[in-house]
Image 1 (cartoon, one colour):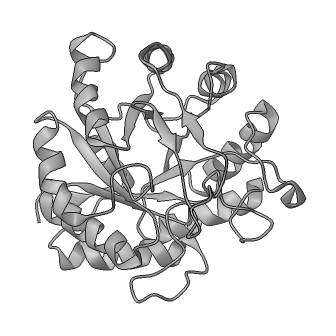
Image 2 (cartoon, rainbow, N blue to C red):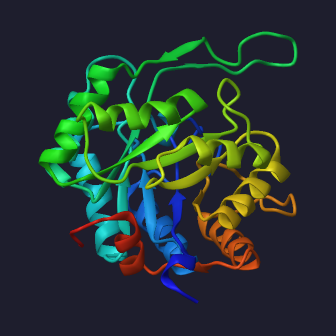
Length: 294
């Protein structure tokens, strides 16, 4: 099996919206390190990190406190030093000082970057909002500032795209000189107010990408079968894939996953059935264009 048959698996181990007091998602440094190790042992090379307070009574709210973030990153690096850390940077509003300070202080090899704005909505069966409507605002200047910080700190940006327009914008950013090199695109599918988790959309989305793009699928939402169908099709089309408790609680058979490792194991099985093999951390760095290691 050649190098181009290798697939990078990422694990999003906790997320930002899941109630840590209700669901046993990891939030403390020890829990985050244990979850990263479970995912790594199952086949993941990348750990996507949101950072949350350790107080489960307060829902495990997101935090950019440098001490807390530093303890989490140190715990993960100590437990799984070969794993690639991909830091979230998502914030609502124009104040990006928290994620910028963390990028500059800890210099992860990769960082996620939302490629555009989205009305972040979810509606109940009775027509009421599941939460007050949120504008997840990511105007061009906000994106530009993040890219400048990432370039200065040799961090590979990963553009999270919630709809087709965002996919198309990534090449505009490059042509405008906002970043250089092959773009890294994550297709976020299944958010209720974004593009749906449908495997049949993938060929269209891939066709809209720059030819040199490195891409992966992130699938979430209530359609449990669709999530795994999306990842299978991504593997068939040459993409990379991501799973984890941020994205889904359910295994392909419908049973509840108790940890991130079980989800990664299920994804490894699917990508092998699609004729791909899992990339090692060193192979993942080469595929993702990461020039430095930990």
